[in-house]
Length: 101
Length: 504
Image (cartoon, rainbow over the protein chains, first blue to last red):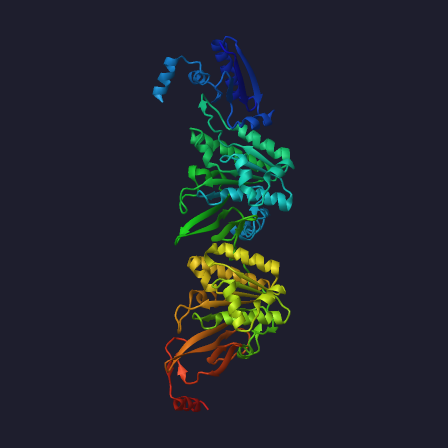
C-alpha cells in the first residue's frame, strides 16, 4: 500500500476542528494501517500557508499523496465521503455512490 | 430622522475617483462597507481596483484586494492599460491579494460541517501585514456557486463583513445583478451590507451603451441622487460626470471681447462678454462656420489662444474654407495660438468626448473655445445624454472663465429650432440666429441677436452677405415679417411707414 501524505487545515481550536482531527485520526488508524503522514495546520497561526494553498473553508483536508490531489471540506463526520475522497472505497461502492448522485 | 443625522457622525473618505467624490459628497462612508452592484460588464471590478489604486496613488493608503472570480494574474494584466501597476505596489507592500478565485480543475468533496474561517483569517492577515486602510472584495456572487449551501455561505459572508467593520477599514463589496432595473443583487447579498449601496449600470438605449452610476443609499449621510453618466478611459479609469454637483457660481465679467466682426459687435452693444457662452444657430450653409472662424481669428490677433473643436468638417476642408475668408489657420497653429481638433462625432461616446475636450482645455488653456457644431454631437447620443453633455460642457467652460461659442444647425432651412437650442438656450448668454429669407425668388440671409444677457443689443433682423473678406451686415429687413417662423410675409413700404407713424 502507498503511503498517504495528508494535510489538515483548521481555523483555531474550535469544536469543529477537534471533531475533524478526531474523525481523521480514526479513519487513518482503521483504514491506512498507520501508513500515513499527517500535518495539522492552524490557519490562525500560519495564514500565509492558507494563502499559498488558497484555503477558503475549514476544516479542509488535502491529500497530496498518492495522486491525484484531493480536497475534502468539512469536519469529516461523513466517513463514506472521506473514504471516497481518499480513493479508499472499493470500486463497487464507488459506482453505487455515483448512481446515487 | 435624516435631518439629525445628516452632516454629523459619519466621516467620508475620498475615493479619488474623478467625479464620484462629488456625487457622493465627499467619498465613501469611512470604516463602512459599501455594496457595488451591477450587471456583468458594468465596470464593477474596475471600480473595486480603482478604489485601492487611487488610495495608494493619492493618499498612500495600502489596500487589500480579495478576488473571488478572476485570478490575481489576470487582474494585474487587465488593469495595466488603466495605468495601475499592481505588481509594483505588491512589491512595495502597498497592495495585497487574497486569492479566493476558483482553482481550475480542482474539485472538492464536502464531508461534514465547515465554515469560511480560513478566508476571514487570510483577510485579517493581509490587512495586518500591509496596514491596509481599504479593502475591495470582487465579486461575491461567484462564491455561492462553489458551495452547496447558500444559507451557510451568506452567514459566513455576514461574519466577514462584520469582522471587516471591526478592523476599521473602508470596504467595497461587488455583487452581480441579473437585470439593470430589478433586485439589487443576487443571493440576497445586500442584506448584510445594507448601509451603503451603489449601482452601476450599462444600459443599451437606442443602440448605444450608456454607463451610469447611482448611489442608492448611504445610511446616515448625504449624497447626490439619481443616475450619473460615467465612462472608463485609458490610463485614468472611471470618470463620473456629476451634473447636479455643478454650481452656478461663476463670476461674471464686464470686459467685452470682439466677435471678429465689427458689425456683429455693434449689434451686440459692443462685443461679447469675456466669459460668456454664445450660441449661433442657423440652417446649413448660412455662415456659422465662418462666424466661428472669425471669432477664433480675432482671439489670435490679440495674442490670445483659441481652441476650435470641429465635428462636421475635416482639417483640410476647414483650413481651405478659412483661407477663402482670408484667415490663415495653418500659420496660427504653427504660432501656437490656435488649436484645431477635428473628430468624428461617432468616434466615441459623448462622455468620452466631454472628457477629451476637458483635458484639451486644461492643457492648452485657451481664451476662447469654439464648438462647430454642437448639434453634430446630438446624433451620437440619446436626448438625455446629450442634454447632460451640454450642461456639463457649458458649466466647465464657464468655470474656466473663457468664452465659448457653439454653433447649432437647425433642421429646417427657413426657421425652426434644434434640440440643441432647446437644451442650452437658458445656459447661454448670447444667442445669434442666422436665417435664410426667401424674397422675390431669391435666398437672402438674415441675422439677429435674439438675446444678449446684461447688455443692450440691436433688435433688428438684418441682411448679411458673405464674400472673400468675411461677413458684411447690411440694413434691417424692414418690410418683412415672419422671418423667424420661416414664413416671411411682405408688407408694402407705405404700410410700414403708416405703422411707424402710428406710434410717433
